[in-house]
Length: 450
Image (cartoon, rainbow, N blue to C red):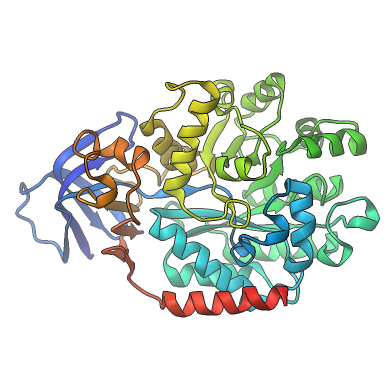
């Protein structure tokens, strides 16, 4: 069995239950799992590969709980630059309806590359539009080729404008086709085993783009196969008004009505639930993907994640759509979460460590995983490293290297190990032609709006 030793790290921040931190330590990996963390220089056992991490801080790979990879193709769209959610969506739907398999695959590579270079090693993507022959398979194959740990959502929209929904009719699918394909994707790709690199979730898009029947039938199908459920919920006041007018319920009451509560469910945003609704969702141990950058960009509001956590919800971070952020930078999202919490609730509302915990352990809990999000023997070997002698950390890391990753602005991650294999070294992707991907991505983005 192959072994890898990451040697001489200045700091290893484990984010385990004890909050362990090691100084001048080494981390051992064997067959994709962490086997030991020990003081540097104490082992005489040889390793098949040794990476010198002198001057680095190591921590668990960051975990992104909500994204829309395809939206990298419509970042900074002028028609959506100054719009709230509903008008922003209306501006984008016609463009997204022109996506095809090449566009989905290329956008997936760009999003994953950006995530990887920001320190992310696992992401849940929520693509909910599949036009012109595009399939979730296009994403799964790209993620596997890049060695990225991927929770792929078979998202969907089924209620178009003519039926009272927000998306145009040509951008939605029939519900029987959605359910048939959802079952196909689960049976072909979902891996429930520990250390899995690919898992599937079912993810009808939102209350204003799918029917109650699809919500119920998706939940039944997901629970038949033991996969998780994901959707947008309580993101904006427009959504709240839509749900009250259309269903006579708030968004949370709507979710409860269609059976979407439980520890197999996580919601994106959760900006506008009431205190009582949070208490009810907390009893069921529902999850929430906090997306501070997108919530600010679209002026959706400030999510009360302190109240979510107090109520018992599982909370992680998501970069959200790359056209409502407009980036895929998980470390930056942790910083935004800390800053927004302090703006809303005071300077002690969230520490830098708490922000990173949301981005690691919190994300793992939201995705229902106990094998990632911390550095400890037996955990999956998803490890990232930042150089502490970089310009962005100068004068900061010497005082508190963990907090410096959030308070300061380090460059891209220097080292990323996913499932025991180096995927980023010296700040560069180990495999893949990033320049060629960017050029193809820009050609497709231009074509979509021409």
